[in-house]
Amino acid sequence: MAKYFFPSSFLLFLGNWIGQITLNWYVFSLYHNAIYLGLINFFRLIPILILSLWAGNLADKYNKATLIKITISLSFILTSLLCILNITLDKLPIIIFLIYSLGRGILSAVETPIRQSALPNLSSKLSTTQAVSYHSFIINICRSIGPAIAGFLVATYNSQVSFVIQAICYLLAALVCL
Image (cartoon, rainbow, N blue to C red; front, side, top):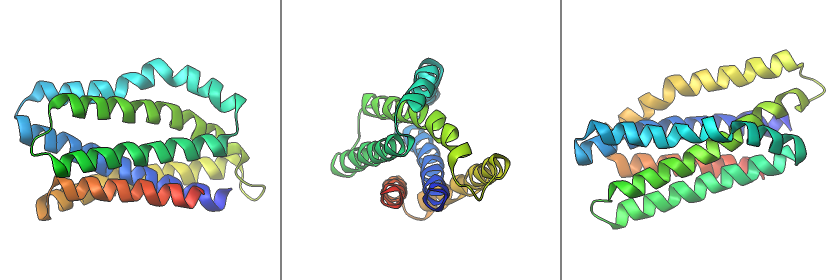
């Protein structure tokens, strides 16, 4: 499982950072309203507060690999829908971005405890300390390069391209898990 866990984590976290930075930039450039940025991030983060305990319980009851596959696949579908709407429509209403942020927040709130509870069971070759270290390294690398990649994509191309790259990251993460 470790063979697939870390590459899928990298792609997922990279996609998360690219998408988060792009979404904030895009919403602000469309509406020039800081309150919308606050709402976007509130809708993204409130599910973590509300659902984390339930998600931890879910991780204890069901197959973690299956749950991770489901959350990554749903992240890909949700982000792909945003890409399609964003490319086909001229200016999306803010409610679409709020619904997207809520959906991504829910998926993140469910996926994070599941992924963390899977760390100790990754491999007989890795200790829990090593697995946590590798996972933390991946998170921090993505935290470092994800915003830079998003900035480069938005500056060089546009936000739509950055959203597509985010969706591709999720697709690749889902394929690696399968």
